[in-house]
Length: 213
Image (cartoon, rainbow, N blue to C red; front, side, top):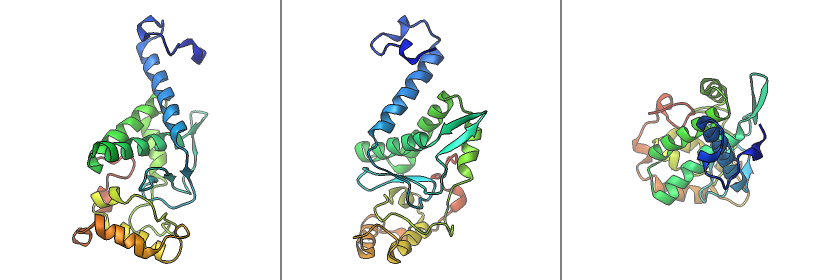
């Protein structure tokens, strides 16, 4: 059935299609609209828990080793769009509504899951694919972390070990040019005053795909 059959200006009740089809089609188009909004997608860095965003929200980061597609029942699925949706929703809820990261993450994760299901993909297969590529605390593959990566998710998870690894990475000169480790340390000190008082719990971290607190 051609996509233009669903006229964007017509009320849904006038469309002679099942309600589930309308919902899936509209969600897929909404996802496309979100993806088009992203002007700067960066896939050149190591990103803990697969994806993240810059402090100002202008850059969406996806881990450089994360495959951009997955195979599902003979189809080649673009998975970047689902990660982008998650990060955009999460960042918007935190910055615009002032939600705590854990609350924003829950909403974003469910939006991501809904979009995956709307694309006709089994969530368990998608989540299994994602989990194969997650980089967690203590992972030696975290060697190139962007200095402007928003640390709020890791702060709210009390992931102090991971933040320290990112600081060490920047100190070695592996962050974007022009940014100094002192600047990042100052930002960490400002936003994470009790960082060292917490002990990271990698297995319980809800930032990982499919994990819910």
